[in-house]
Image (cartoon, rainbow, N blue to C red; front, side, top):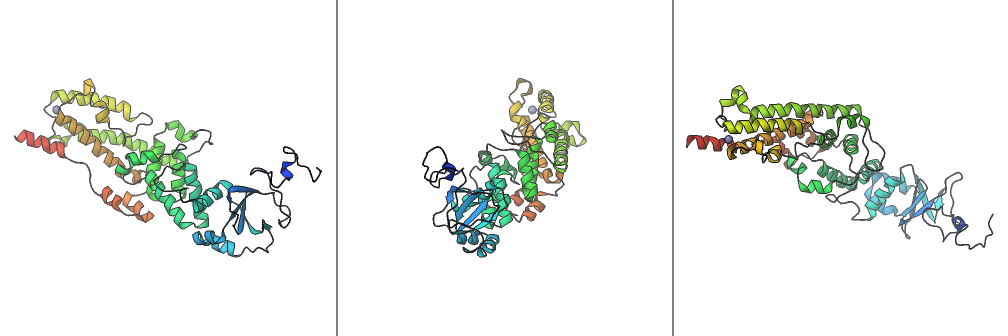
Length: 380
Ligand SMILES: [Zn+2]
């Protein structure tokens, strides 16, 4: 037992009230009453309000906050804190104590989101761990307005519109700890229906063995896909392969199909361009199956269009570009179905967010302009 008057700066600091830091257990004040057998608690300085009137304790960490503020934001907390009285069983720093069984990380994210206006704003890059944490905790305690903000942000990362998906705005929101496996898990667990297809599509960009062996980012633990998500991924990959051929036949190399002459396609009588298309098709075969090749992001017609072997006339180049664009739109429309989830519209309805996105997915967006150009040029 150390002498009570010890003022050694290094030793016995655990027993010193003022000398303790956030990591060391706080010595209870004389008027504090903690239930026997409870673990010691330490204050979290940044969430310790001197005028707070309730102390939340979670995994040994204590937060002195305001009953009224919690009650305003959460029905669950309103009921919980209204029962906590300063003369109750457990008191700390003069405030009633409410013990929570959640992860300390979740509670810290939640309290910071409540107290700090800038802590979570949709449309500003946020770590995936913060997003997951906030979705979990705001659901449990019904912090509805914070939850809505987080859901909206998640929807920006995993949008239902292709143009939003390939936008630079979305690219700027991808966090450092981005792991599509976690994103897919979040989307499915939280029933964020319209975000599931893109989250799962992002998983399919990883090498096939990873879909079965799990994926980790940095020092984070390995995350595994569930068998049903693995199934979605495989179905999407298979569909991409199939679609590349379908699109190739229908739009890029139409002279090989019976419908080739109706409407007439620009390059049927361009032998040099046909040769170039064949070369492009071979390169496409290699590229489309490559891990990480994102058919929505990278335009093959642009990537290959300048190679010597694939140089073609302007009309044919446009037709190729157009064919590829229509293939992408087709795949985008198919994504929900490939995940076994119906179509975009039904997902948006399930989320209660039918908006302009619904109009976009319901309207064909590819243009037949190059073919019309060709018809005009032939007629001329
Ligand atoms: Zn041509």
